[in-house]
Length: 322
Image (spheres, rainbow, N blue to C red):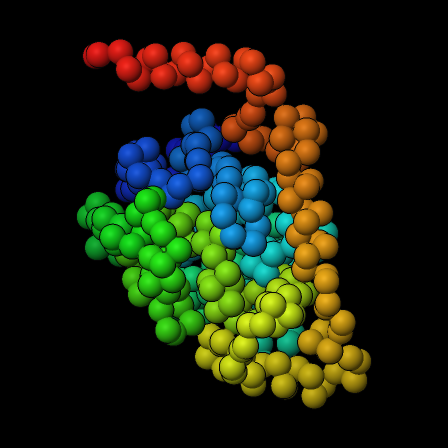
């Protein structure tokens, strides 16, 4: 199956992905590690060690699938680690649309639906989303756009998106508008995607700017905002991609049942996230293959003495002159 996918992947896209992967060997967001599927550069596996922020010290496994039309269309990011997070669709959910309509309905043929564990990129990269933009990208792909014959340029990451960032630099990277990055879809690097993903786990300010309509898990979005309000955070009008208030109010007017925003979310975020972090660090998940599927990144369960010995060997190797 992998070899068939490799042969069907356009040569230019294959070259683009391999070049990006090579670049990540030199500069990857701190705590994020990725690997290529043998024979299929369109599927990447990754692990994220959350070292700071509200989701520390979780260890998150994920997969990135790149469509043939990338970077015109976004990759699909799915987490195999179950976590209560505003942008991650629950693993028990059949699908969640990233193209919410005013009446709250979702078409069964919605191309932008997320599978269980899907990570919504709609907040960070809004130029990738919207039916009109997606249809235009697909038409260009089908027509064999001549510009695609040129090797895509991978812009260097901005100074404030380097792996040696600080909390202040992460905040400065955010825009005042709903989109996280100013770059158009064709300019988005995989580094930027990975950086954004990590920021949604370790930066409270980034989580605060996510609009409800971009959420992969609306319940987690409500719980996070309740948690922040309990901590003294004051929110103005809800952030939106377009007009989220219109979406919420129009949906509520048609539903006689109590809205999710009216539920009691006190303590829910802390309890669910604490449980998710504990599960992500458990031995069956870390070392036993639970939830890893075809993941190519594995951890070895070693004792403290063996670990110290490995560190010493690595240090001796680094200290030796070449």
